[in-house]
Amino acid sequence: MDDRDLIGRVLAGDPRAERELYDAHVDRVYRLVYRMVDDPHRAQDFTQEAFIRGFRRLADFRGESALSTWLCAIAVSVTLNGLRTLKRAREREVGLEDAPAIGVRTVEADPDLKVRLTHAIDRLPNGYRTVFVMHDVEGYTHEQIAATLGVQPGTSKAQLFRARARLREALADFARD
Amino acid sequence: MDDEPFDETLQSAARAYHTPPEPPREEMWRAIEAQRRVDRVRGTVMRRWIPWSMAAAAVLALGVGIGRVSVPDSPPGSAAPVRVTGAAPAPRVNETAYRLATVEHLGQSEAFLTLFRASLRQGAQERLASGTARHLLATNRLLLDSPAAQDWRTRVLLEDLELVLAEIAQLSPEASAGDRAMIRDGMEHGAVLPRLRTVVPAGTTPTRGDL
Image (cartoon, rainbow over all chains, first blue to last red; front, side, top):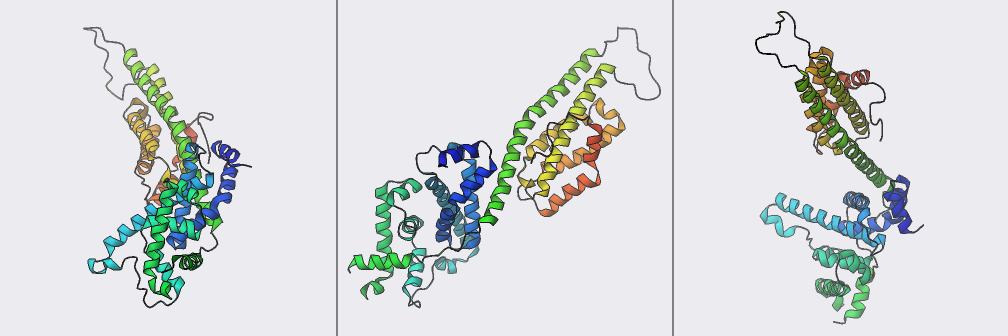
């Protein structure tokens, strides 16, 4: 059954169709959200929220992109908003003297590339990080990223280029080796 | 620095970035399903209750209007005999209109509380529109101030219903389990629903257990 039929059934109020739609897309959405939040509880919350919003707004889906892209766009939006809220809450809780340490971990002691890379990706600005995770980690094309984030493919490429440059900078000693 | 080999190393290492565990599919689905059920109920409640509430208000207004028109003006100089003891009974047509409005209102309240209680059981009551409760509360208060409340049984039922509706109307999405338990206890201890069902003739309720 294609997306259009499934959407029609969901809009007609068929709860089984909702489950089918969920089953078809949940893994992809959850993977992307988890990569961005690295927390099972938050990944669960954001994924649920993305699907709830998706179902509520399904009547507005025009079919200009694939349903999976549309759902991922909602998931990315929910996740980035959630991360912003979380960051604001942490900034309120943490004193000024601790503020520079938010989301930043000392990397000098980690000899392993993967560990240092993880920390370096964590510290990328959200825009760069989202594109990097989608392209280099999850394997989305620039066209898919552009459709998901509502930008031009060129913007996605530029952001990926900058993200990689930042990572090279952060891991310069490894690059030299 | 030669970027290409390093980019390859980077990409290869990046695949391990925040490796996701198996998604908790069923757990997430249960939460989504519960919220979707509430969304559907909310949609149903809004679709059904807005016209019903408007109809009840219209019936009530009609009752008041009929009441005013039907009370005969006393001709000048011919004073009506004064009843010394007991309350004077309202004119008959007036009583019928108020009774109709009361039954209408109690029927709506019964259906609303039935839906609300079912949603309490599913743990999703906080999403129900408290607006419906507020609307019913307004009608309830009009009826309490009207001749409909002259019958003591009706008055007591309307008063008990008022308390329950007021609690639901104030229920916020962040309501604690204690708030929810209080409403449930209020409904159960006052036996509001069974009493409503006793008063409301069968077939006047728009929906039951539609969750």
